Image 1 (cartoon, rainbow, N blue to C red):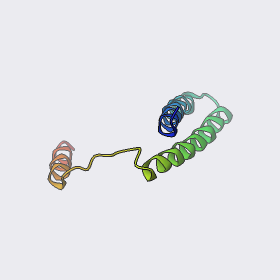
Image 2: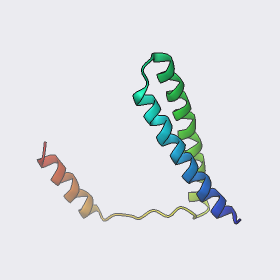
Image 3: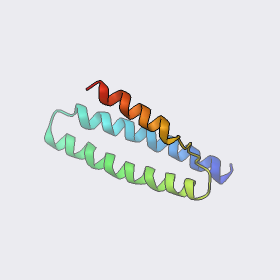
Amino acid sequence: MQDKDLMEQELLVIKGVCDLYEHGTTESTTAEVHTAFKEALNTSLDIQNKIYNLMAEKGWYKTNTVEQQKINTTKQKFSQNN
């Protein structure tokens, strides 16, 4: 398996873990459980960020740039709904 493929798989797994911890945090019924899930979520988010940064540094995680006009149009659209 290539390094890029491995990193993509790791990123997918950690994103899934973050999703589970986020649900655990919001659905927990005691302060202790909430804190445990929240700490695990924060740790997982840090790991996800490190993986993303490594992939971006190597050019393995491409992002699309959006024209400023599209951003302005979207901002205007949502500001009118409030």
